[in-house]
Image (cartoon, rainbow, N blue to C red; front, side, top):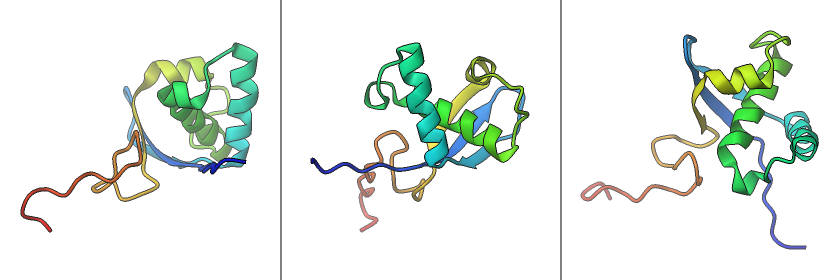
Length: 108
């Protein structure tokens, strides 16, 4: 089996008309993504990273009580302006790729 790295990201969400929210996703949210993705024929996470992270943030927010259980994914998706992985230090890691940013000249 190839080298697979699965993570459950801590996600920062900015939604229209709401305060910033940070939620920790976990395996339950990822399993819900997998089931829902197949049912809706959505592309895999690697082809749709923003939908994946938006979905995980919604699932984690509902599971933890950060939002009401009645908030649908469609309503959540429509209100999200930005999502980003905060699992690592935001100042040194690109939110989308997880790759370290290069050091600025004169900082090393």
